[in-house]
Length: 246
View 1 (cartoon, rainbow, N blue to C red):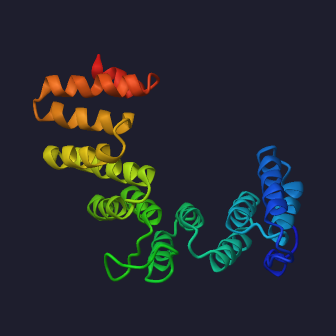
View 2 (view 1 turned 90 degrees about the vertical axis):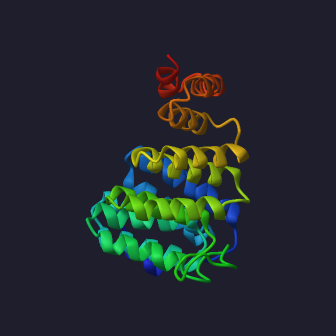
View 3 (view 1 turned 180 degrees about the vertical axis):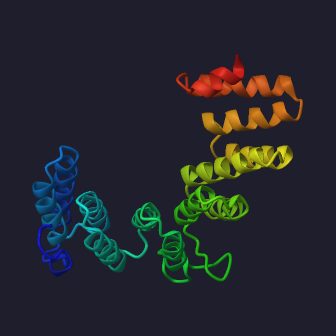
């Protein structure tokens, strides 16, 4: 490892443009397998004011190098600096999950979604949940991987309803909820979820495909074929949509 990351993590000067350049350099070097050079670049990024993205990249590098303690410390330091940064919390929880610490991953989501922890947290949907749609979606994906589809569905629905200001967040969450409902064979509920998503993102190929699958399961074959056709028209490389339409 390259020294003590936490002792060098505090930004020394407010130069965010330089910080982001160093962060991009670190990511490129990391991909190239030049870990020492990448570590130095991430360290410079943090020192020049780049916050959560640099901490995430640096932490993932340390995980790859087998320095799990340092990686965990970097995730925590990034969260202290930017508690509203949903991708950092999602990455931190995924790190814990990869280490087999499912309770720890769930605790990371709970802490990140507690009232006041997220920058979007001004009203709440439950005792431990904030208005941060991306976090709730990430948490739902985690619960789904852990085999808790009912928990996942609740989180996806909350994410969708709370992501009204961002069409992409809403579309992803409604699609995730609709997909859960399809697996549960709740065809009407699945169709409702996909159509709610399409109301905000009418050209989304995954949502069009999902709505078509739900209608096909309800024996509504002609409307389903039209939805499959539209899904292919919006995304000609969408293999599943082609197979459904054919």
